[in-house]
Length: 77
Image 1 (cartoon, one colour):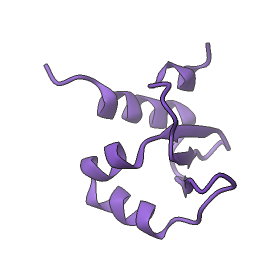
Image 2 (cartoon, rainbow, N blue to C red; image 1 turned 30 degrees about the vertical axis):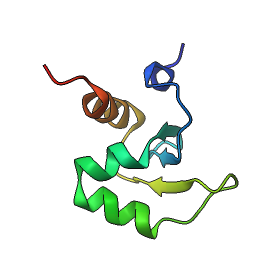
Image 3 (cartoon, rainbow, N blue to C red; image 1 turned 120 degrees about the horizontal axis):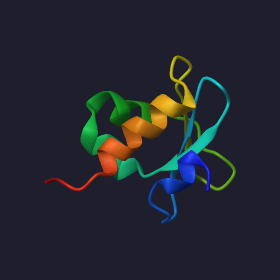
Image 4 (cartoon, helix red, strand yellow; image 1 turned 90 degrees about the vertical axis):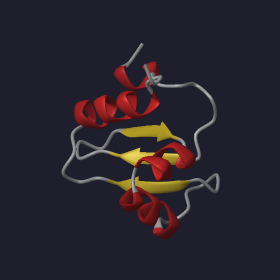
């Protein structure tokens, strides 16, 4: 299992492209609720092949994005 496959398996409507070119699936509702900046990026992002949007984060490595997404998807305790 790769690092980004450890995230929720349901169909993602956003692809996050990291600085090293990795594409990681995420859900626009999760990203938008976490940050108004991400919400604006999603609203303005180009649509991919399957109508999902693509967000590029040039300054973030795959490891950093995976940690960030795991934090967003973690259950509140």
